[in-house]
Image (cartoon, rainbow, N blue to C red; front, side, top):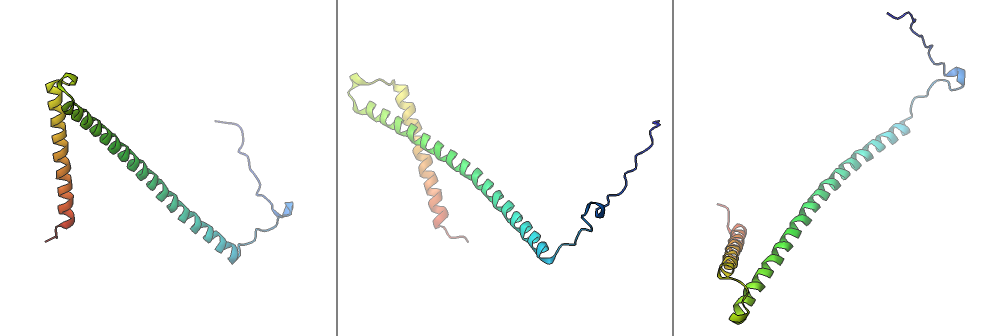
Length: 129
């Protein structure tokens, strides 16, 4: 055990330092405090909305970049396949397997696009029963 006695701190005497009693808040200051609390609550909600919107923007621009990248790759494949078909046989640089794989990828892409557009059309134009 410790031999040191506990310290006793006397209560603070505000009137001794010239402050006196603490006045009660007025109705105007209470209203001001309530207005401030409402402002910060609305601001917190607004900041939450901005944060949600920023994350949606990131997903949107990421998806947009992927769509553009896919379109560039498809266009490059289409140009390559078209040039290979149009140029004379002495200028061909693709093997038969490479031409076939580009053709299969194009057919798959075309069927997927037609299926997606068809389902979108049906979803918009079909009436619920």
